[in-house]
Length: 570
Image (cartoon, rainbow, N blue to C red; front, top):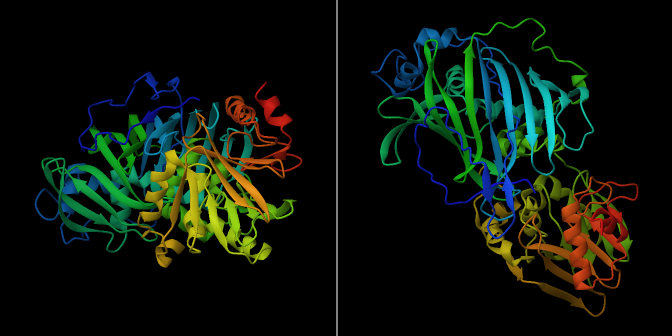
């Protein structure tokens, strides 16, 4: 598996990065696992700063004059980035960059990040109008290796993509409308990685920027500005005491299932670009872990563009603007963008509604969604749910379907592994109360943290209910025995995909449920399928049906044992 991980103990010191800084370690080793490598690659960064109307810098919101080094922190920031008239006269910004994207929610070990892609991009953004165009080349490493190349254009809250942006697609597609969540997350990301765009947007809003005291960062006392933009969590910008240039910007997002996640944009390698001084290196961190490294080889201002440069192609009305999905993206932009960097644009389609249910055996129901599925198992006097994926917007519908199928109380959730897309909705289900969560021992501390962490950016049902949740650690095997109904076996198996992976086996029904290792009907990962088949063989499980947490084959996410065996080439 082409992955590189970073330890949680990464240096959190904020510093101005040296010219051209980018971690270029060519070979890395996972602890006690196989060596992995990086390829020179390409990735997905969206850039855009949507401003409407005329920018006026003459009266800064914190009471300054925006004129020079004296006065308010905003005055000093404006002076440090460039002359007031130069900032006001800048019509657009074009960034040419390369970098890497990491993700903490898809790594093998909780508390680490993995390399999911490398990228190059050219992003052009109008600063005084709602238009942006980004040309991207992506070297995707996870969940599958693929070379992607596409163009994304956004204008007036809508947009389209043309080219190859999906690792599961055979090749390029004609222009397709992109959903509101993709537009909104790209806009927010683009502002966060550009102090110029963030300042322009803040100054354009009444009360958009104000002094917020002092903070100590890396042993230095820094002035702080608070930026408040409609529909978004506040951003705090920290200014270097000598240069008054931004050292970093910081905001809090909601990242299911961990909830409140501190997102930092760390700026470095400042260089002159015309009359302005702008950063040529940006690193994004979530909870102290690097998730995005970007080096700008060139920044151009006031670039000439023709009338068709931002024109929307295709039928953009095919993806009507969904305000709720845009709101989700504004509070969870980096969570969504990580899936975009993986070449999984389907995650921008926020899933709501109720799953389809199918009874695989008496009292055993498969609850299928567009991308993620759960298994509901009836016992004599209670229910067991395997998988609570994505986010509460989806699992609210899962819970509704569970209550339609049975009046028995839900007493146990089985989490197959810690990956965010498979555990993101678990808190909303656990808020029912009286629930025990069974997890592989290696992921137990992660789930304890999930249930203890604050969720203030987007308060979920558990944040409001405040009910206790019991964690049941499974070291190798746990049997849920109900003599009057059935036995359920929880097996922890060794996989490269994630530590503490749990598969669920129903002996009487000869049915096995797994997540990510083999997904009937989906493209094959031979190594993962082999790990699953080898575990089935070693454990001597009599499997007639293999059910996946993903999968959309002709028979749905269900296959015979022959399918993973064939996929593993055994």
